[in-house]
Length: 332
Image (cartoon, rainbow, N blue to C red):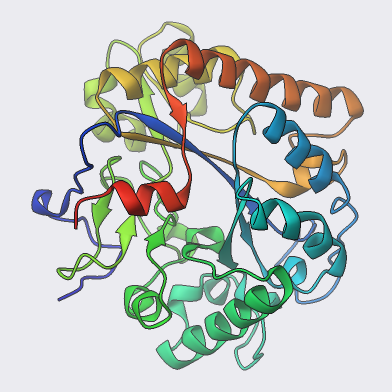
């Protein structure tokens, strides 16, 4: 039996890990095309200028002893350069490739391009499945690996997504962005979803790894209730953050300072989360493609963020892991 990923899972679905796994962290990269985040969704007009920068980031991760999980969408999957850069690290176990579905640029093209249809889970089951199969097959051929992890673009899972993943041999989903609500634009509401890994089906065939976001501050235990109520009052949210009362901290270098993320890491560790899932978008590896990296100094700051975060995680005894290790360590 399976339930939609959009539903809050029962406590009994919580995954358990074998002794010795401890607490780990996983670096995930939304590896995707460049497009203007402020313009309407479109099938055309994207670019791939940042792809050569994947090599620099991969070399950086190798120097830090981290194997990133690149969640690849159609434009990246069909890029010969991206495959040339990542194929060897994947073969050598220094990186992993997963699937990321941006339905508006992913064939077959049968749906109208719209905000609602940019969330793959809103598409008819057959179309969501067809797009996924097409992408997975291309990734297998280009990167010479069998992807076992998935993230829906825009975190857009739906009623049939788990069935699609099971049928296509995906062992891990990481589409749930806990403590975020995208329902106003037609997406999912993950506001009350748990942060710990959990099973999406009774057969324990698909494991959910939510992206890690925590509340920090004196009022953090009430964050699930207070933060949504404050969304229309940004000045109040800012004031509560400055006073150390309440702050939502996702583990990402995009819009989150090192000092903030270290506070978030401390909360996640103290709460006993077995896995911390960090993420960012690959276009941030070159200035000018995302709101977070506009100049070269922003890119330098991005790498410094990762360097300091990796050092702090090591200091706290949190080791890096991979999707493969997670699948092997989880109790079925």
